[in-house]
Length: 371
Length: 234
Image 1: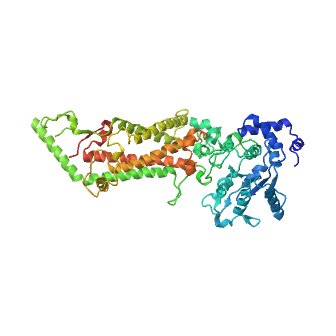
Image 2: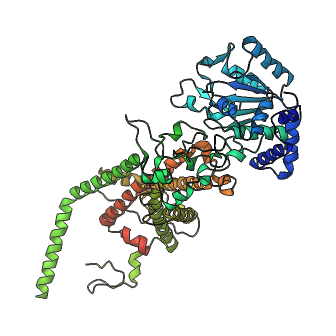
Image 3: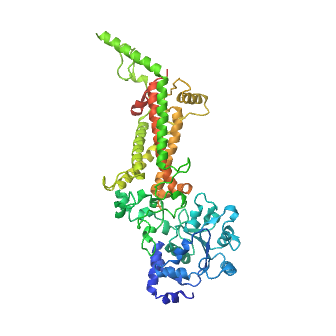
């Protein structure tokens, strides 16, 4: 791809549409409207840093998410237009050629290129689980990530370990920031990540040369700054007290709140309700299924059971719900003190009988005296 | 036949200059107020908190029921926070020796250790002698310290979960660090579970005051309403 302007023209995208897109992107990243020309200039410039896309333990869902980006079409072009020098799934080169291209980019743009990581890094068994071109995932990540200008971890696996890190985590899977604690890692968790957030993050980096404002878990605030629950279109039903009690019941057909069906929206930060998926068509809750909390650290384990409100506690042969454990605690307390009371009464029985006897005598004396 | 009531004195008893002499003013007004504020807060927080976990009533019973339940839960939580902090403050200021930090048994004092073991022996049926102290029973003090630890966790986790509605706000800045230690969902789990631990404590607490009220005739129950306890030092 040579010139971005020519490319836009070839796709019949007017200057006006392009600037509108830049404004929309600026709004999404929560930067002032005055920044729109800077965003446009950053996108049009020809010295954009190249991208190396690494893939480890993943399902390639984030690659799919990227390849299917098409809203608006400018976003797709930006992702096309970034020099994606290495991407195992989509690049034409293979074998030594591909590796050579990667090393050439790393050499030429040392400390400048963008490293996008998909999938968790297995650190178990000395890194034997996931190797590419004879190198372990740990070595590749440290080498490529260590020399990058910025690392963007796409999807929950590369952000926090995700599904491969779920109990019992047989490969010792970790996220990128666990492996490279000193580096700037922008996490875009989600299963998969929403490509509009990736576009926004890349454009922010191209425009300002730095990572966007992030929360304590390394997620850009523009995309993960609000809870799903607080922007949910079914929130009104939550506050009103209108809940789906069973799949397919009248409440479900009415589009009521999925809280009692184990929706994790109250525990998850993501812009799904506002940005949505598949060209802004829909998102899980809109489609009638509760949020599973895929973009939170600790997903998968802490968000299970999928259709329950709170995690279950493993052990004692069966997993126990919070309510069962709590009920047992209160029941045990009642049993202990009821037993204590019964024993105390039994031990003092003689004394109690004497006291009763005495009371009777006193009463009798008083009555006699009165008579 | 000694009358327990402070004002009436039986004719055959030797006259008492001041009836109140036989009583000790143990729980001062502010301590009693804090106790009952906390009691009602725990009651309201438990009911509304359980409702938030499992909304067993729906909009049919009351429109906007979840919104109102959460509102009550939050407002009561703020009051409870004040109550707990006030009680901790009262350990150091504006309290007599029964309610202050001086009432906490000192593990380095031989006498305090003996009293403590006397209570343990009594509770575990190893001894028939019923120990008696005027203020807090030392085993109960240990339970209260643990209980206030639970209260502080409930307050912290409660404000942290509330603050999630605005992660850029002051409340999140003060409390959000808890999510670096425990994930979101486990903070919720513990916030729910500790309600049951407090419930277990309430059973213990009520049982123990009834037991000692009866065994030591020291007015344990009425003292938290009136503040007075009969002087049973001899």
